[in-house]
Length: 189
Image (cartoon, rainbow, N blue to C red; front, side):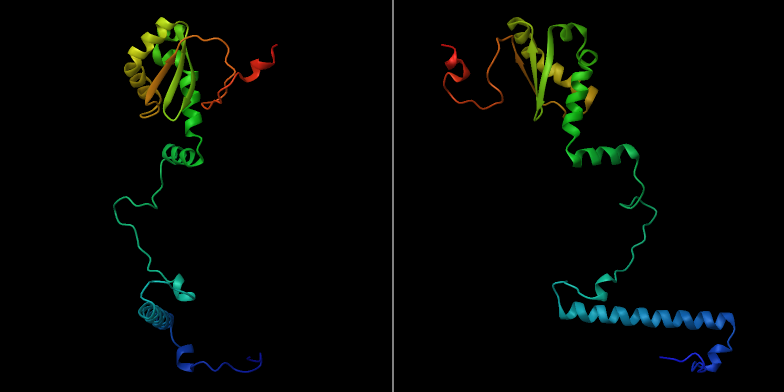
């Protein structure tokens, strides 16, 4: 360690140089240091051909500058960023379901909306409940046109198929799976 009173042992010729000479010397020193790092990285890659790097040489990567074309580092529009974020979070299906149920009359028109209502959207299958069996049959025949209208209004691929049900009495079933037997009605006497 150097003591404060000890004079500097640097080369006196470099100390007395002008600004341009000092800048050239600093640039030359930086280039030499960079060349030494690249040589050590090259040696490490030759010793380990599988590309596993360790130490400070692992952090040395050549910087790639983007050209005049688009690049992954370019700023992205907010709409596409939010769409990607919602898709990654898994909330896209819930937003699609809410959009279909909320805008049902606007999407399919008042005549169809007066006679049926969307119940659920699961894996691209939209379940509709009709007010009568005749309307359920009519909805099954209109399914391709309804799917096309929904996909135009909400987004391509939102709905893949439609399942229409007629009116039914109260059901004790909850969910797609069922165990055979009388169920809760066996305690009614």
